[in-house]
Image (cartoon, rainbow, N blue to C red; front, side, top):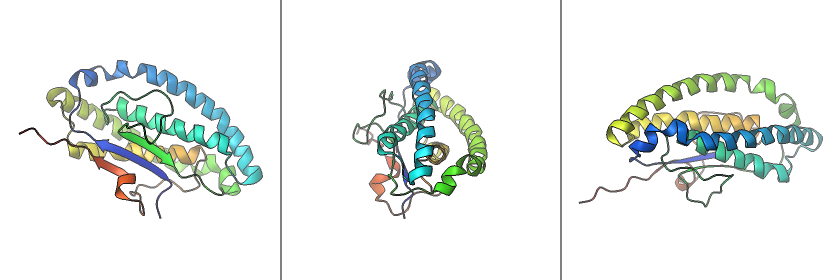
Length: 208
């Protein structure tokens, strides 16, 4: 059975030294847009929480916006912390827009009223785990920054390690934002086709 929160991050070896050097400044407009979107999501989650307690379903009108914000947040996070190199598009994005980082959530038929009502308590262990993973992610990004500035490349082994915190963060956010009842886990998704999940290789062959 596939995990319902799908995270696809393409590996691209070559990165721009200049944009990596200035990443903390370049990403500021995205952080501002993301702040506005997440404030809106915070209000919508309250409405979704009430709706789920009443009906056991996530309102379709809210689900797409919240899931789209999760996609955008993941793209901004990957760009900011040097996991991806292309400048992200503004907005919620889509699975067909060609950006190398994508997140989508399988819409659930029904959601548990009980776990929804206790979600803030149930999510605490996941948040604590994510806190330590976030610290680790910052250290790895610092090491990646030096590697990219020095060589213009992100080593594949480093990429594989850096990808885990971002995937787990997307799962924790989806669980916290009530998009799924499935508790966040570390394992790669099972039951999906390879093209739909995990790390997609995007290494261009070296010119002869």
